[in-house]
Image (cartoon, rainbow, N blue to C red; front, side, top):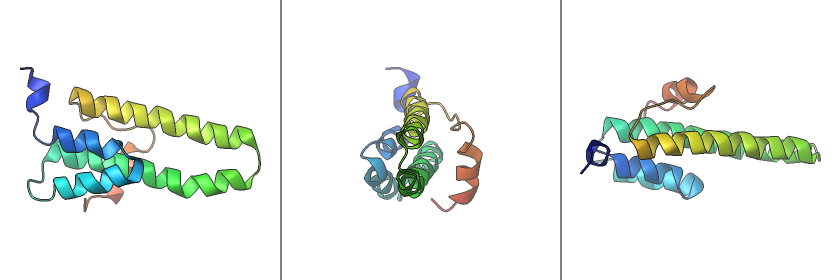
Amino acid sequence: MSQNNSIPGKSSAIISYLLFFLGSIIAIFMNMEDRHDFARFHIRQSFGLHFIFIALAPLSTGFDNWMISFSLYVFYSILWLYGFIGAISGKKQMIPILGSLFQKLFKVL
């Protein structure tokens, strides 16, 4: 068994990226009793990422320009993949550009 599989809270961290916003909420409840630091880190990252996407998606479609909408989806997908790979590999790497902001804003999670 590798060391990455024994990280406490790894399953909650992975679930937080799946199922869009619902996965973050499920992971919050999964981690509520144990409060693993690794899971809390990734829950904050994924919650913030999903929240920003939900907030910006209506604005980007309001411009009625496919390039603006497409760039939002590409930006979200790249950041989501970066965070998801970090959770799978067992690393606490912040999402570029917004990761430190998410850690500050969602300290409660």
